Each structure stands twice: as C-alpha cells, then as structure tokens.
Amino acid sequence: MALFNYFLLLFLLFFYNCKADFLGEYCGKNTFISPDSLKSANINHLLINLVANLPSNGFSSTSYGVGINPTYVLAQCRWDATKQHCSSCIQDAAMQIRQRCPNQGEAWTWFDYCFLRFGIQSFTGKADVSFGIIYWNVQNITNPANFYLKLGALMDRVRKQALESSSVGLFGNKGVISLTSSETLYALVQCTRDLSKLQCGKCLDIAISQFSVFCLNRKGCRVLYGSCFAQYELYPFFFPLSNSTYSASSAKYLRAAIYP
Image (cartoon, rainbow, N blue to C red):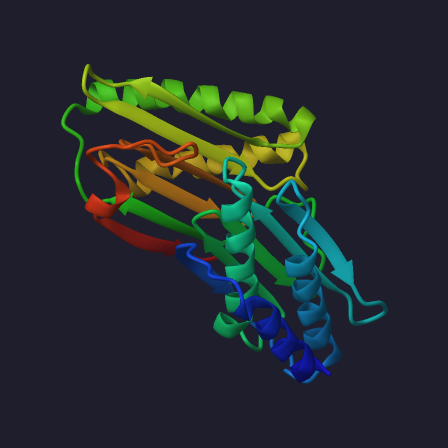
C-alpha cells in the first residue's frame, strides 16, 4: 500500500511543470521508517491530499493515522507568492521531499516560495530553530555604518508588522528602505501560521540575529528555519517583482547549515 501511494503521488505530480528553486532539506536523524510501513503510507496519504486540496491561503497543517502510527504534515507558501507560484512550489516540495529523505520519519524541505515538513511526532504550535540553512551574498557592502543603521530600522519595522499581521493569519511582512540615492534595501520575514505571536517573535529574533554571525558586511542574507525565515537583499526579490539591474541571477551566494 505504501508503494502504491508513492506512485500515486508521483502520478499526480507528473502533469505539473514546476519551476520552484530548491534551497535545502533536513532529513531527521534516528527516525528510520520502513518504506512499506503504515507510517510511510500515512505520510504519502497526507502528501497526496496536500497536493490535491491545497487551501487557497497557501497553508496546511494536518495529521493522519491513529494509535502508534500518527503522521503530521505542515506546508506553507511564502505569504507574498502568487497563487500559481504557491501551488507549483508545494507540488515540487511534496514530490521531492520523499526522494531526498526516503526512509526518514521526519523531514523538512525549503524552496524559494514554500516550506514543507512531515513527521511522526507532533510539531505544530512549537517554534523550531533546531536546524537552519543560511545563504549569504559573497559581495561586501561599502558603507557598513550606514548599512547596519538602515538594516536595523528596516528589520525592526517588518518584524513588528509581521507580528501585527497575525490577526489576519499572515505572520509575514515585507519592506524597503533607501540606503543611498541609488541603492535600496529590501527585507522579508515570515513565521509558520501555527505559531503564537510570542513564538513567532522569538523565532524571528533568532533568525535576524544570524545576520551578524554569518552575513556580516554582506550584500544579502537569507536565514531559513523550520518555523520562520528572514531575508534582506539589495535587489527586489518579493512579489510583485520589478525589473532591476542587480538581481539574484547576477549574485553569488554561499550556504551553511546549522545542525542541532
């Protein structure tokens, strides 16, 4: 049955032309499950239903199974993503997560426009910063004093507004600030919608604090956790997208993983 469900999942995804950029994955340690087990079948069941019935708000947190075999899946699109980008991203994530972590009972995967995780232990409602992925631009800024003054103000603003948006179920926000007459700084933050306002704030604080650890004096930084993310760049990277002479395609990034 588990194998049948896996092929059914691949069949459902075969017809989609997905272009979401893969950012990274985490395959849980010491969480091996047999591919023909009931738990494995339950995970496939949840992923199939997720693809077929993705809510219009781009967020889903569901469970399946009883007794000793419950499984859990959480999926969320980046809050600024279009409906088309959101749907395609979740489809890619659902297809690839079991290919990248085939025999794990816990797995996370990040794409440019969405995040997906599953587990055999309940994780919803808990801020998780035990594992993270960080990307930073290899190019340095030219005026650190002015840059960090403006970055601090911008991140304080988008964090505050993200927490205020929890009343409408977003837990996300974006913002811009002028650095010079020719440079603009862009920022985006978001928490998963299962968190409380307090948990979201703590998660964002930890994510933003990594800017000075991994991305000191860098032109761009992205910190990805299982419960939130924070990003800043010197080009417009969130929707609605606009033309820019400097973009992600012309920038080079390094990546690091933070393990528990």
